[in-house]
Length: 101
Image (cartoon, rainbow, N blue to C red; front, side, top):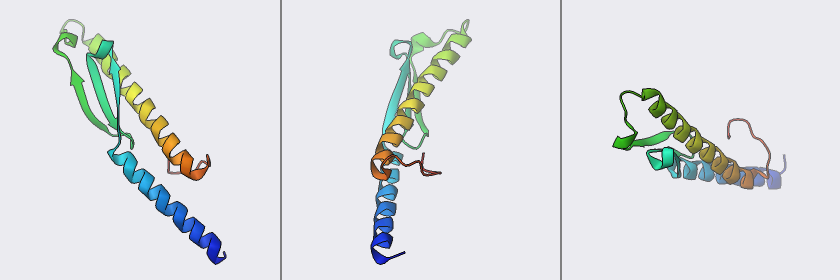
């Protein structure tokens, strides 16, 4: 590998590391039930918080609450994955690099 290719590879690696760092602190939100359930997820797919409004809690319909939490979580995870693909894809030129996304 010549020096120019090595330097380009090092620059790419540095940009990817910075993008991954930014994804760790970036957050997206998913909601369900008109906002009665809200889930916040980082760009690294970690759930940061779950908020449930009191009106969503009905002891006689726990299944509905479970569905709302699942829907909000899935929405937030979809947004986080899209954010990661956009961020990292801009650096890699759309190449799929195992372990990044």
